[in-house]
Image 1: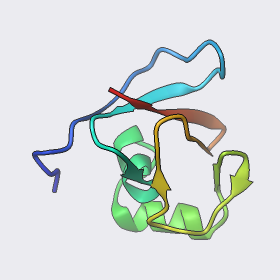
Image 2: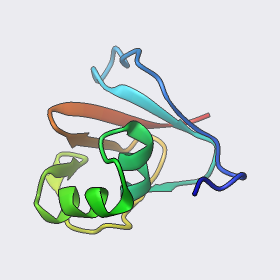
Image 3: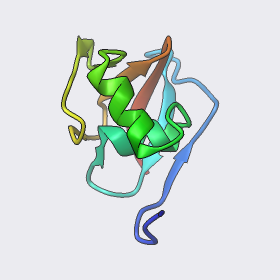
Image 4: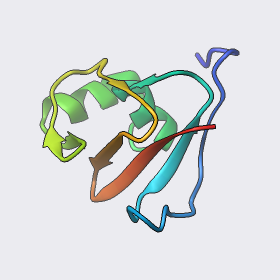
Length: 89
């Protein structure tokens, strides 16, 4: 269920500085599992959890196993060879 007070969009244009796909948020932070769902990399919360716990996700260059890790403006996460950058909208 998508909360009405959160507006998140994933754009296909890459950030030229980091070669990352921007994931724009209008909130102070987004949790890693939500970012995976909104980016389209995970179909469900359970799928996001599985990706994280299987070590398939990196945050700012390090493998992470914290499902509800808070990501802020400028943070980068990588999954399935695609790099995403959190951008404040």
